[in-house]
Image 1 (tube, rainbow, N blue to C red):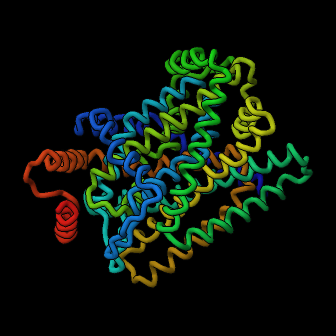
Image 2 (cartoon, rainbow, N blue to C red):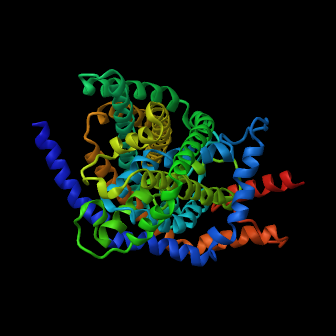
Image 3 (cartoon, one colour):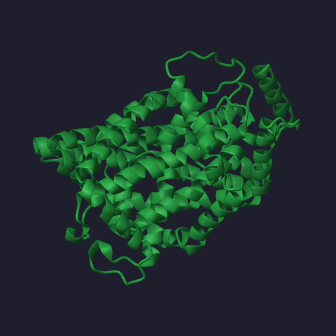
Length: 503
């Protein structure tokens, strides 16, 4: 009975996924990024240095220093908002997802990840700008924003705002399932290598219960606790992965030119599929690269903007510049290191094409570092995945709040509690779903979430350019009215705050 249900779900999802990740959506993703790049004069290039100088550099310098919080705003620091957002993007997609893209779409898929990320940098920037511009503040001083807010209040298509929020709910549950599935798969396989367990299913279930329990304890505290935990874990796990990857690449340094050669030469192959992992069609290469790229950095989904909107900063463009760095770090650094480590470690012509992504990820670390590599991987991937689970719980919570925002406060509170309970329970059950199905389902959810967001970004691209120009004009000393919020009362309040901080 269960197998029949799963097969039916697979068939339905395959059909829907083919539509969602067909050429129209792929073209929409690239076209949106290109349009926004043109309207912001390729901000991801012209202001990349400033993105670093005003975001990650001062944030790293301020680590360990106490900063006074504004008691009027129930918000988080820019770095905590960034950490929460990037914890949602830096997950299993950066390791297992990249390997899956190479196995199912060939090494050429990596180039399409880079292309999607290049335009995704300004797409993510634009999401953050609009997210902060249209965010709302409730009676408690809590700031909430996201694609559903700027769709409903900026584009004035409230029905599409609700649609985006519902898709976000499904995507949150799906993303959590993917991450937990990979945590349980990784840890259980590592334990099996050491202890040779006879019942892996039971081990995976125990791991699922453990992840669900810790998640429940953290998400009760909302974005503040998630941001604090993420700001501690993200730097550590990222640095550990970067160091291990660089060591592995240096061990096979002679294979690096060949790896880059494969990435570029296989990105535009027009031959029919066949011949192992090197014979994919052009369409497959693009689809796998784009889908995994968006899955990894989330540019265009309208998800990470939910975390960024909780930032204490009053300037939409300042938080937008965090989005530029976020996609750069996620794809051009983490995903690239995964790609090069994999392609320099293995000869793809010797693979059968039937390898499983999680197993190959473990094998990659084991081949380079032996048992120590398995141990390190068993720490890195669960941390990557766990922080993503935390971030998406917040995204789902805010989507739930938006869906019920016209109801009473008690109804909204009850709805978010119900969501959190369902979210935690499904974490446990996701450990029992087969890997391929869980990836495919969330690919579909991501695509569904992206469509209304991309449509809105195109429609409001002129506003993004206007807010951007307003910010840099003020930086150059021009006397113009600040564009900080779409709502006059908040705009005046934020402008006053900035004036006080500058005086």
